[in-house]
Image 1 (cartoon, rainbow, N blue to C red):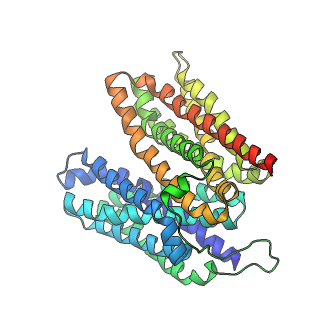
Image 2 (image 1 turned 30 degrees about the vertical axis):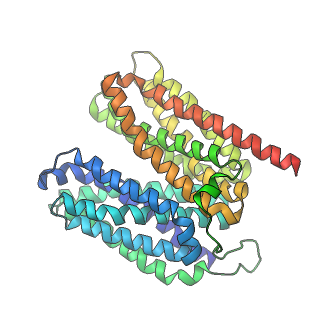
Length: 395
């Protein structure tokens, strides 16, 4: 039964990734057909992000009251409804209205699933699950492309993904008894859903070591979001790479993350979460150095993007998986919820800030902007490790 539940969770992670790249794939056609300015996509994504941050902060209260399985099922159902709503939208007002449940559903399921896996499954599964998220994020543009090329329109692309989410919702509701199992026969994998009194935001922020972890997460998502969003622009504008080649290497950054997480699943339990985080950062740094090399050929920069993607691979899953160990199982849902909110702040606001700097100064700032967040991660990660080691020594 545990294997069946794990399979459903893997499917849920694919589902989690499906909506993330759907709007970007559809928007070039959507904004034209709906007579909207191209810049309005930023408004929609900001509303989605705000909903995601809010539901992440509420995830501890929701999960402890209703359970991770129920929160996941309802959240996926909300996302399915929002995607269908997008497919029938005739203007900006409807898109804005459906963006609210879109974001609320995404944040709640992200925090609930990540905490449940961190509590009950080995670290290799956390890496592979986030690899499956990458599969979902990579597949949805192809679904939208198929809908557009078949003449069905962007509306059908949203309906197809909404249908996939609804099917998963059905199986999630059927699986609810599995989430409440008391334990496996050999006792090696304690199951069950964490309940208890919710922890307030101020109380969580007072936990020793929380602030460095939040800053590490913020730095990671700021780096990943900026690196992926602006890679092609940097290569075209600053390295004089043709747009087609630049687009390919921009996508290889995400391929590096996805493939890297697959590989990390084989290393995670041998090295441990803290070493995996440090290893990732130490791979990112030479990747950024290659991007910044002041030579005429674009190949070092292109190789640096792939290396940076590989370095990003272990960081997010390892931080999440280490949370119950660092802050206690009773606090992990609250901490992970705030981690998700911190992550979304980094990925929402830092890439647009680079866009402003690029326009006002130069796109050549790209590797140095990434370096700021890499050094923030390194500093905060070392500080967290030092605190953890000090606590273990005192014990």
